[in-house]
Length: 260
Image (tube, rainbow, N blue to C red; front, side, top):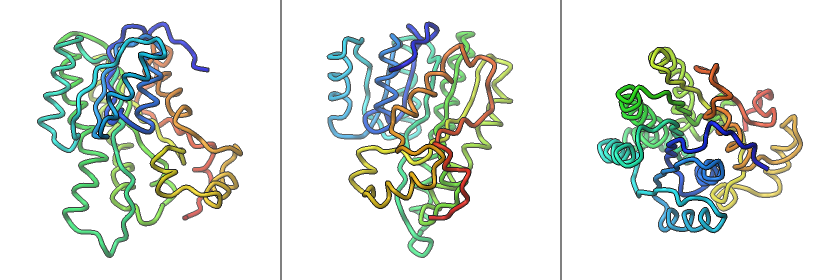
């Protein structure tokens, strides 16, 4: 069951990569709060399917546009259209990303650039646009960057992904300092091993489940809802004194310095 945060009702919220996985769960969670929700994605039909699901649950239909976050001009133009339609974005969740596997030997400059573009670069430029609109409207805002504990654990075959997610920690702290005087908070949410449809299709199996549960302090697999709930908290006025921090949601996995 979700906690209801009165301060989130009618707030303008944008979630990148919201058509599937963790992002879709975050869209559902904000819709249930009565927020004005907008999101983008690249999953074919994912936007329409999620809108139908949300409306069937009795909530207002979210606004959706297909957009690849690697295309920065298109991303910033889309965010501008959301602001023009609904007003300044008050909650930005920089969620879009892909944890594709790759070894050091097969890495190329093009692959490296793509990893950073899909996992890091868009977060900076989405923040740039949203912060500028919030300042112009003299509106407070909460920006939530999606990190990962993968870099803390030194996960192999993910160097592009882990480098991006490590950089998000530093980026978050710097942006919190730069934007705080304007009433804009910036935090990072740092998930552990989260069960999603993509993870289940590509990598999840009973052996992997057993390994993660053994390494975690809490003995159950985390799902997308366990990320959505703290996202609501960081977006709400209940966290108005929190900025520049990493909130780790990993069932205690990061406490174990095991590579694997």
